[in-house]
Length: 260
Image (cartoon, rainbow, N blue to C red; front, top):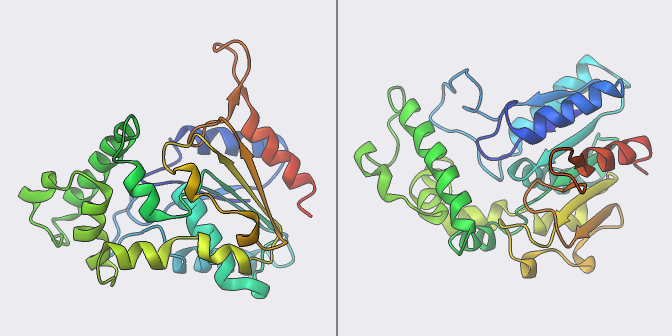
């Protein structure tokens, strides 16, 4: 199993550590792929990672399969990692080498997600993540000055502003709209051929319900499971909050037992 974290995620993220523990308990061999600049190892290039960057995932998948020939591989992506995974699967189409894939809480339409995070309580998530993104830019600035002067970073208060001034120019996009249009995974769902499970909640604060894919946008290999609740990478159940039941981990394990 190869696990992909979300925006500014790591092994410390609640969803990655819990899942890796559950996979190890079931005797699966699992690892976490860190996106550029998210580990303690600084990225040596000016570029970083973004929602549509599939080249690094492709490299790591090929490396694993080369090291472990004949072993079935499943990739599990959370949030931004789920968007990257689905886009890569669509790009690969019939050439996909995966035994199966799982994507959780995916921002299928990046523009809709960015606009939704500017509304209501969703702004709490935006504020938290943008703070982490700005800190990452500052840490890297000694080696690679960003497209925006450091003293003006604080002016970037929405994802659209950050992606227009930082993400897009660093990664060869014309602007934020070009980045979102080319990197959103929804347009790639129709060409996915590996057995793929998507787990999504209608109340996800990262994406409005009207931006979710419909059946006609899915390939026969894709199963979209929509729950009325679950939030963003949540899906916790149980009557006692002191003894929660992590439904998501159990659903993933059931899929792994029979991905077809």
